[in-house]
Structures are given as structure tokens and as C-alpha cells.
Length: 342
Image (cartoon, rainbow, N blue to C red; front, side, top):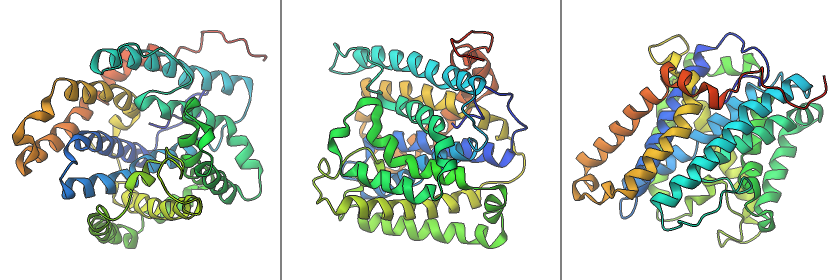
């Protein structure tokens, strides 16, 4: 979902990053499809926990990596406004009206301060990228970002404005991406890393299955304070470090398994933001229409069908045709003037 440096001509695309983004966005859709199947199903919940432990951290790391050259110049700030703020306004409004139809909240107001459903990532991307020059200027950016995240878990008063709780708690992953260099990414291309990917995920899935009845996996959602999670204050900083370490290991294993060269799905990596924003309408509609009430979906064959269908839907949503159709809304032409000094 991460966009190239906003407000500038997009550099030559890296097939590895596009492959990673496509595969990660498929996992986002699969995770959302599993959500209504979790109740009473330990296996699905373990898979859900595993996916949620790393799929959004992967996007945040990639977003940071692609923001390494961002500078607070008028041209780049204008591009950032056009490529994050405009789609945020468009989809926040669209999701509000859609939620009025699909939920029991028909009077929900249109507000740009309380991101609805998936739009939080656009708000986060805007804030992260806007502050990236600061993180590049400080001496120890990653420890500082982890401190900000830990303090956020201790601050229930942050509230829902721009979903700052989640923005702050995911910040270390973005800053990690800012700190990475191409040679760091090449480490996951090594044969040793690729061989370790499958055992790492096997161990993580086993641990997730064990942990499901024993821990509150909402820690991996990064959108609540310790107070909201009913945990003691000391748990916030501890879980910030623990979840960060776990997510980074899983993200590295995931990236090690991603093909480095161009594949049939490489062109789809450029359209992950479109798929991310659009698939939420399908996920909400499926619950509204009661599809998950079908008994057979709560058996292995049904769960497999839901998984395959969710993954299959994301492919056309990432397609270039969809990118072209929505480019007017998500990538405003640069001829639109903004009141910024040159």
C-alpha cells in the first residue's frame, strides 16, 4: 500500500517490493475474511493471530523504506497532500455512508477526525511521512520511536482523533523502514534466510495456537492503551518491545519467502492501496448480508473456500484497470494547484 515518494516522479519500481506488497495485501483480505469465523475456532484464530502479527508491520516498514528520500519541500508536500489526504477524504466519506447502510449506526456523522475502518492507514501514512525528516535527523530514531509507542500505550487520553493511538504504536515499524538500506534488504535474499522462513512460520503458528486461549492477542492490533486492554501499566512498554520483536522476525521471514524477481503478480503490487481501500466494502457487505451465517462456512471446507475467495478477489482489485479507473480519486493530477509557496 505504501506509495512512492509523494509529489515526485515515481522511480523505477522494485519487483521485490511489489511482490511483497501484493502478497501482504492478500493476507490483509484473508485476515478480514477469517474475522467472523474466529468464535469457537482455535485453529482459525491462531492463523488470524499469526497474520495480524506481521502483515501491517510489513506495510509500515515498506512505507518507511520508500520514504527515505522524502523532504519537506513545497513540491513534495503538495504531492503528499494530493496522494494521501484526498483519498482519505474520499474514502472516509464513502465508508461513513456505507456504514450507515450496513450497520446499526444510521446517524454516524461524516467526520475526518475519526478514521473509519481501513482509512486509518492513510492518516498514519500522512503523519509518518510528514515527520520522516525529523526521524532521519535524530541520532537514535528507532529507540525513540519505540519510546513513543510505549508511552502511547500508557496514554488512554490520546483518544480517536486521527487514530493517533494506532499511528503511534505502529510508528516504530515505519521508522525501521526509514533506517533500512538496500544492503539490509539483501540480507533476506540470502539462502539461509529463505531456508529459515518456513520453520519460523511453523514455530510461530504453533506458538499462536498455544497462545490463543492464554493471551489477549489485541496487543498485535496496536490500537488500544493498556487501560483499554485491562492490563497493568508495566505491560504497555513490555508488550511494545515483545510485539515489535515478534513482528520484525515474522516480517523478515515473510520477506525472505517473497520472490525477488518479476512474476505474474508483480504488476499488481502497484495497486495494493486500491485493493486495500475497496475490499473493505466487500467485507462489510458480506457480514451485512449474513453470508457468514451459512453453517457450512464454519467447517474446514467452508473456511478453505472463504480463504481462497478472499485471496482471489484481491487480484482483480489490484489490476491496472482498477488503478487507472481510480487514479483520478487517489492520485490527483499534479495540475491541481495547492496554496503552497514555491
